[in-house]
Length: 188
Image: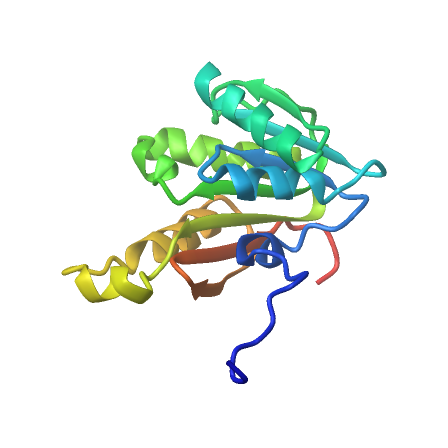
């Protein structure tokens, strides 16, 4: 017991790795986990803005419930991922939920348009974080016969192709992979 670190008050990994701060303008694209979605939506607080684009009404209902459970105010829109319903330079941070492979499921041209839309709605110097499926851990790693290290690598290539700079794998832990890129035009 004395070796175990306390987790009281610690944020879930996906929230901490996104780096969203109070007062920021956040756009989430897609939804994998209701808990992560809700907690991310709550991070900008009343001084910021939280918005979300989901592909269908059922996901929108789940996203609203997640936001309510986290006490977050979030503007949820049902829309295609390759034509975001927001003005240019509207957001400081875009978080793309991709643990279920929704980006990979899009055709190559549609995926490229979706990432270009992320570039368009980000302010200069804004960031995108893709939350991917990472390397399995725990019992999942023991019983899984094949590991797929390609999700994060594919996200890195896709962000670079979309024109993001300083693209990098932030981390791969607890079954999550985190890839970050910056929109050109801001300071490094």
